Image 1 (cartoon, protein in one colour):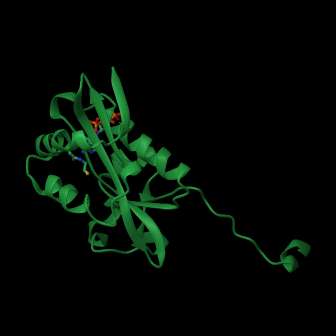
Image 2: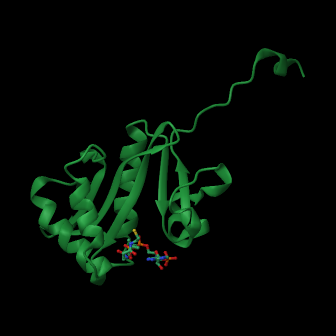
Length: 160
Ligand SMILES: CC(C)(COP(=O)(O)OP(=O)(O)OC[C@H]1O[C@@H](n2cnc3c(N)ncnc32)[C@H](O)[C@@H]1OP(=O)(O)O)[C@@H](O)C(=O)NCCC(=O)NCCS
């Protein structure tokens, strides 16, 4: 049985193992370990999937600024190699996005394959004028709007 939930303190070594195995380098594990004690870390938005007592998948949403507004970065996302393409990546991402939506978050940015992230509603960020050091990756630099806001026109528009 798979349990998808927020990371707990005793998951930390398992999360590291998942990221090392998924990426084949320690760069993503080090990124997570550097973020964990800092202000960008939002414990409720750090999601793991557990099977048989072991962490098998991980997705992080952490604080970034988008212009002057608060936003979230999605990533890294990793699944143990032997368990990929079974829906675990989707499950931890969807749970993270569900939690972010419930928390009233508005914007999520991700750098990743549009063929994968498009299924969660991500679209290229550049047409919205959102730039970053990842802009040169083209359509891989993506955004998802949660809790959309309403555009309100002044009264004269209603007399058209
Ligand atoms: C990318 C990753 C998180 C996806 O998780 P997963 O559990 O394997 O994927 P899911 O089961 O949720 O989804 C499977 C689908 O995603 C596709 N997919 C998986 N990895 C993909 C990738 N890197 N690029 C594009 N599509 C991908 C599969 O082809 C499959 O497509 P289908 O539904 O059309 O058949 C996982 O494969 C992984 O850990 N990869 C290595 C690390 C990595 O590249 N992370 C992403 C960058 S942060």
